[in-house]
Figure 1 (cartoon, rainbow, N blue to C red):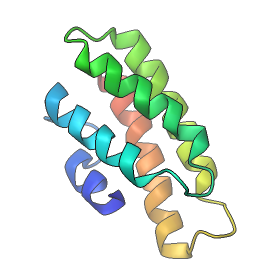
Figure 2 (figure 1 turned 90 degrees about the vertical axis):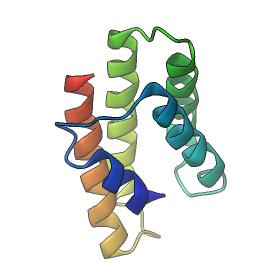
Figure 3 (figure 1 turned 180 degrees about the vertical axis):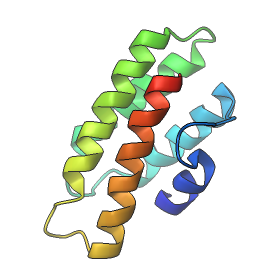
Length: 105
């Protein structure tokens, strides 16, 4: 999921993802995260963002807030003792991409 997400989002500046694709991506994360260390910090925001996108007319400020919270929680996961160095780098990149994307939402 991490590699696929980074491939889809790129650097976060020029993302051409539809709300429907976003919903599918978020549902993938909701299926992948349960049971992972620290995932409970992110699951609520992922679910709320998915529901917001499904609404058909998402509030940009609410989406931005959720993305920033997800970025903060994601960045904290990078330093978990169970995360290897390669995955840590990818997690930090995802946090950066989420921050950048939140500014372009």
